Image (cartoon, rainbow, N blue to C red; front, side):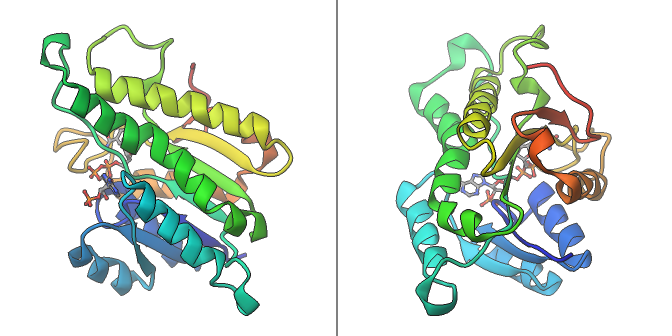
Length: 231
Ligand code: NDP
């Protein structure tokens, strides 16, 4: 059954690959971008395009307000699934390299934005049939698996995302399915040319997870193959 799925950071990388897979499955995809030059690739797929800078609360609220009044007779446009995919890595990996600005940038985009986007889209998610929020995290956000250390902005912000998602899942139990997924090490600008997984392969696996996502996965930390990862 076709659903309406909003993906943040859909202009390149994993977000664009996921838009590709989901539009080909017949879903209505709303892809958000910052750079208008990225609109063409999404439109070619048949996706709708919205502008969103997830580091800017006003931008998030503007999209929420637009969707909240976009349905018939001014009611919220239903969104079945929100995929918080937009993310940033960092070059400040060592303790002595860290700046407050870089830590804030990582936490704004990777940890706080998924929560604020879900809040802004809540009228639309409530109006949707599926009521699913999938937050793209990283296995580097696992505290249990952190033996390598460093990468403070990225590890810290993804660990925070994991915790915040778990809180959302608990608060919204019975109303919304909220979970985090590690997409694998994927060959994108972020993953780099040495990554073993093609964006299309990861996106296809994520689409499978979305197809069956429901209350049993809420509050879980999954690998892209559906297995659970340690917190
Ligand atoms: P890319 O760097 O290729 O793409 C990042 C995406 O996030 C771009 O679309 C970018 O938009 C968007 N983005 C960044 N900052 C903002 C912002 N302030 N507002 C709106 N959009 C923003 O990364 P990937 O595609 O590889 O990563 C996708 C997700 O997967 C991320 O959450 C990442 O942390 C996660 N991940 C990736 C892994 C990998 O191996 N690639 C491994 C584990 C997790 P723009 O083009 O405007 O910059």
